[in-house]
Image (cartoon, rainbow, N blue to C red; front, side, top):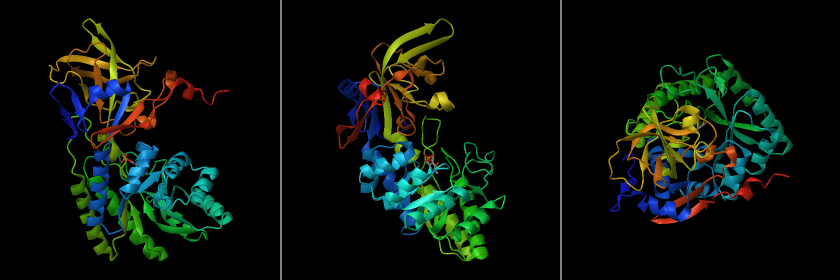
Length: 431
Ligand SMILES: *Cc1c(COP(=O)(O)O)cnc(C)c1O
């Protein structure tokens, strides 16, 4: 199996975090998202311990909560003693409601509104990650009006060519995020930021992309960023205390994806950084990383109930399900690969090719194309693996389909962390 929290029990049912998924589908109804708290904690602690060990003692991961934002996960992050990355006032609000210590929150985004900036300062968000000179000036003004000095990291575009590393698409010079070194504008940004009275510049941030399997691209980014720290030190006498390398480490969606040793990757990046710091005569900065997908993706799976089998003679077979792009839009958006299993008949022959068709009135509403399953029947339980990241977080009410129930499993106990939406919930704001 692609993750060690999956197995098959004596009834031939898929188990997840030690629990029978078919039983859970019956108990809570479908579509149902299951989460494995042990796996979430394990991933957070791998990052936390490896970063402490190989970088500086105060280095830490920030959970990129856009991957899956709800109250309970901020409580887990708090108890695992790691930081968080928030990208909206909505995520900040959720974290505050969960009692998260907001000095360990980093506020991201390329389009923070003035209201959001004020809201974040009111809620004592530790750092802003500012995306442009105009934005950092607005933060300065608002901070002044509120009588505070706001700590800031600047988002720098390292200019890593997305063609050398596929799947990397946010670190290039023409990205909508950050300010480029290549054009010289990043240096200008640092100089202007240092002159702002209500901004305390702490260091730099970069984020090169997502679902990256090798650690070379992170080393390439680190090289460019350490040189940038050395250059801006020479130019402005400013020593960046913090370097945030962003998120992006990959996860296994199918057997075709490699297994990733996160700890070894972190060590590899640390080796490169310490060598460079020695060359430039710098102390190693505090390193932050922002894993989202690699914390929650394989900590989650989605269960559906099979509807109707449509066999188009000589062409294609479709099995319909009771969910679809409303709870998982990733195939529709990017043709993302997923592993699909027939949870109630795991030991039968996986020799029937079919496409998992969502329930929305949209031909593109597919969860996965041409997978092999035992020939599915009505009321079978279909499991889609590795759905913890960017599934519920991207869910919608298209076709007025309520959002699914999310159940957490911890120490063989299951409990609801997000209730299934009702029809009444969906029209609550309608007048
Ligand atoms: C999306 C994002 C992340 C998380 O990326 P993953 O691929 O989920 O690890 C981290 N930092 C920033 C700035 C992001 O935009």
